[in-house]
Image 1 (cartoon, rainbow, N blue to C red):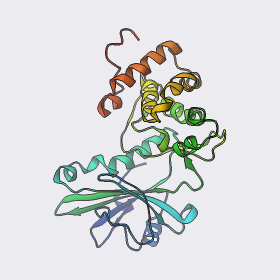
Image 2: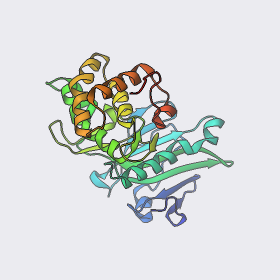
Image 3: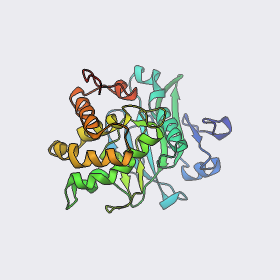
Image 4: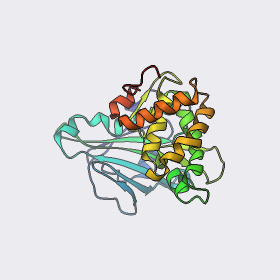
Length: 279
């Protein structure tokens, strides 16, 4: 699919431009949002529900009659300083593209309906995306935190998502429990991975990818669960992925990455941990 096609562009009088995907018609997006959300504003639209707010990011649920469950998620990036405006492509635009790349690689992700952009005097002052509301699904963090069997046991429900990323060569930079959604808190293998602002795409089953995914997941889980996750959970991940190394080597690599606390760029490039010899 060609992204950002001009015939899919909707211009608004308030300076907001919208590019819709093949999943929704231009007429439908006009009907859904007679007043298109302003991605440069930090003020919530009337009737919306705030889901998350952090820095230059605002995520909320909005009514969207006609879409599944008559709801949608709007993720907005109000850009407040000139450096962010000049680098506007790294925000909603990049996430919009990464969602499509992930879908092309058959990674389960929410549907994405549109990309929004507002300009003022030639500068992009805000950008955003409109994506599917995952009705009835819960994130793994919530499921695992309330599991009677304990966090580490419930965290095994997220292993298929990490294996799918590994098999697809999709290095999701924030693949942790709160970005993996499941249809229920049982043994269902249905999942969806959200939050694709930062990702890189490599050859399937790229070297060191599974190690990076595992180390990041463990680091962002509750600190009290680290030892448990480095045991049975990590062994199950290694087994389901059919990793080419022995589990002993895999475990040492993951622990080396846990100690290294690598940068986002290092993880995007699947950089091995330093001082690991021939592991």
